[in-house]
Length: 140
Figure (cartoon, rainbow, N blue to C red):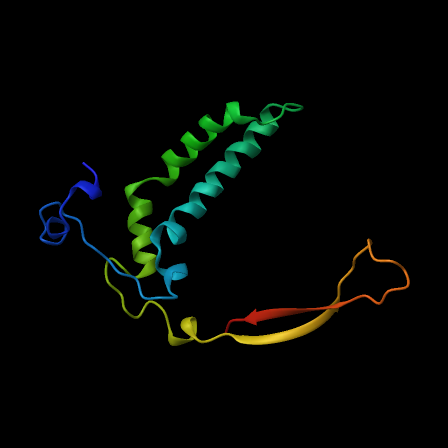
């Protein structure tokens, strides 16, 4: 069964026990449970597997042949019910915690500009180097 084959009304009436959730704009970096609570542990377990594999196989290269085993083991550790529950809790989605973030967490950013010289070795020696303006966003 796929979501595409289900009438939208059946998603909302509880027939399939799926709760539709709309996230406010510009908040997904804090409110997406997979980003907040799943992908980081997955990456951590995957990196640990590779580090351990490289120590146990000195001089060998980690290739696509080892990838499947590494990803499988990392996914089995990260893809647990406890991880999912923690991810939703950290986001304040379930159990619902509307006070999980302060107003400062969503304050507008300030912009700072700083001019730096663009280094370009292909330019001739007689030409002036162009200025490049980089905008830094500071969140507080």
